[in-house]
Length: 380
Image (cartoon, rainbow, N blue to C red):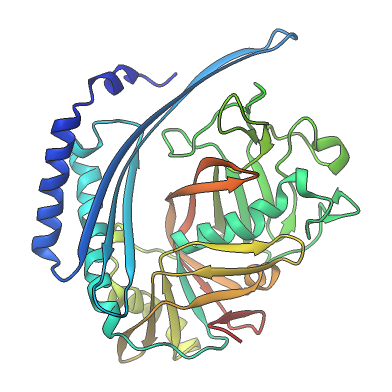
């Protein structure tokens, strides 16, 4: 059980509302031109699972989130979000967390104001750079859901209902891992049936290794039991689900400092210093994640980013967001390199069979994909 759960009983709604007004004013004063909406939520999920075999486990999952939505005005409307999460309801009093939030919020407001005047980007296949939030979306939507063993009758990661363990699905330096992370937005140490949740290496250096399984699906899938079942509430049926999922690369290149320090020009300089711009004189940077979906039967995905930048040796140019689509296998084979440490705080809500649970994850700060016809920007 996390310590300090009594802090949830001491949340002062009037003080929280006043603090949100202060935060909104501070963000608006430094990044005018966008309509801002802020929200602060606190949730405390407490679980106890007892079984006839003697299993008796209890845990709590505190989740607090501060969000900002920045919207542009006019006919071409764009909305850009920013968020930070913490297990503590004192989130807005934590200096480090708030410093990160202000950096993200100001950038979201600036971007929302700038996007209506940005041009569209042409469609096609390009060398791409994606940030950790979009990499989390790729891992979660494309591989995470396809690895949930209750769907193996139709998943591209299974053959005749059995997990295709050992099959090559990506580059040899790429792995995808799902596991609970302490103090994380989606942390859950036990399954909803009371067994310990295991680390699941879905893709291990380019090869399928683990599926997300529960006691009902592991046997038919021919995969080891990873205790991946989650439930929205005691009224809900347990289902194999993700917690914190990420893309991990061998030997990532350095990216000093925090992620928030990397504006588009600094990202361009990072790539130039590493020789990526010499290899690809024109690179497209997809910034942020704004939702998407995948067909687990075919492995085809469609994602949305928050903004697009084109990098050349002379500078960076902003473009309006566009669809990022393709084959999940093609994308995983196209990954060439990563920059920076793992950053796993990209948060969201995952829906399945009418149930919603918190999700999180990420990757290295930035991930580079070589051009391939199996991954496209824009429509066909």
